[in-house]
Image 1 (cartoon, one colour):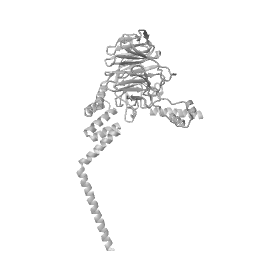
Image 2 (cartoon, one colour; image 1 turned 30 degrees about the vertical axis):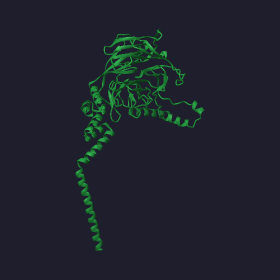
Image 3 (tube, one colour; image 1 turned 180 degrees about the vertical axis):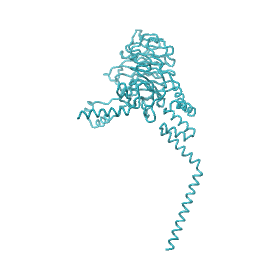
Image 4 (spheres, helix red, strand yellow; image 1 turned 120 degrees about the vertical axis):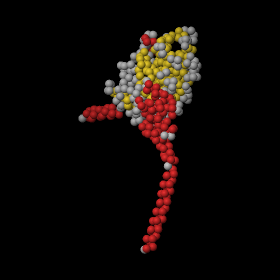
Length: 488
């Protein structure tokens, strides 16, 4: 009987999870409505083709793990399994340079061993490589001449028991270098332009779970000896990042982390997105009917487009979630694993022009997604809207709604434009469709004020009439009572 109860309870839990999870298959194109439910939507991007190393005129890729695209369309690929960096012209699909060996400052040759990350500073013409199995970061010019080799820090700030395994690498305008380390959860290791270790940057917060809160409270009453022995709650580590101007964007692929999934960090390491309520990835765990299990989003890489849009790559479902710079969801792109546009192990995402590129370390390919006409309409409207041109964005938003009546962001854009125009009734209508209480409140306040101004004379006359009527009625009642008293 006890086992039957347990089985029944398990089945009930599964049925509840299924009921609360949107049942969307891998090849569906969807977005989210005002209630947070997945609904069918127009595609913002469509899979155009898949490129292998042979398509670029070189040997097949082998377990590639990262890539970086410059503003002139040069794609630098960390071809980990082949121990090389491939520089390819993305437009002409031609390999331009193969970096498989480098010249050290002393004139000796050095070779890569499973490079996992690559970044190019176009300002200084510098190539940064996370040479993982050699436990170093190489800083080189475009001819392969190394100017600096960064290895494990000899610093009290760095735990000497930890190995140095750089996974990703970027550099800011000042030449400061940031690297994601595979075994470090306290943020990205940061080095000055001359290679000096300066500490850790952008650590994620510890997830405020019930267990973490309980451990914190218990710790207040523990002795120092017990505190030293107990298991500590640690944050999830950074798994990918990108840089845009003065800001560094980071992501984590931990499916159990709901805070700091995506961050926008300023120079001081403060998260600009900390107060935003955005859910990056799927709003709810997705129920995969083909695998008969619930799938949690895990953001493994992040890319910032030239127009400021944020592209987040979900490892679990192999989907790209694109947000505008205000963190509003624009598109969900991806597909069936066995088809073009689907992935076995998506590991990196980049953008160039109106295309998105996704690297698959299992298929050893780069998938190219091209922008659809619907995507162009949305991007045009979003650009105008975020730049403050609400009136100019109004017609593009109407065009978007003609093609997808469920597109929530269009309702918000139209409501904002109508609010600025003084069309409070229209703004109330569209903000209600978008379930945007802030815009609705402003529109209602304007509508009420407008009604008072338009009908002020009538309202004053009505109030005056009520006052006169009340005074007259009061006098009449008093007079009648006085007459009744005199008769007595």
